[in-house]
Image: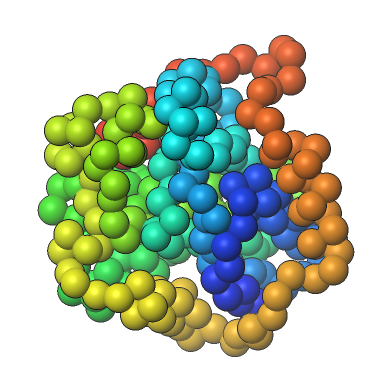
Length: 253
């Protein structure tokens, strides 16, 4: 089985989420290989769950601090994305994982756990979807299986934490943030470039990899989605908002 690797690039919050969806659409039409994508955020950003109430984050502080806000296609709680953090997505037919969502989720999470172990940070998968180091969350992940059989999982690995801005955005105390959130730099002094190489190598291990960027079609669709769907966090009328909280503080989805 051949996989496509899309190397790390920076985009706006809306474009990052739109690209993931565009790849899903292309994969459903058998126009793209199963894809591992790494990406960065042009500005510090917050992604909220597909049906999460946006008022659970501090929108005024977001505006004040130039924090982009985007609604994910996946569920779960609000996640603060620092420009220094690492974000990935894996998009593939679920049949690759024996049509087992739980297997897909745990297998991908263990690519992260193995990378952390190589860095020198012991971590484990807790509460079904939290990667923890010393009892603190160091990686948040979310997934969605589409009706067409395409599986999407994306998540963030925390490199460093801005404990001045992040708590204000997520409406939590600085003390609670420090008690609940871990980072790579807190455990190990290591460069971002070295972390990326280790992370990438663990994701592509034992796979037939083709390094390739987005297709013209994917990029075109992503730009359209970024403008039409991801430029606003307002949900269409009739869809019920759900109070979900902050993923770093409350366990699980």
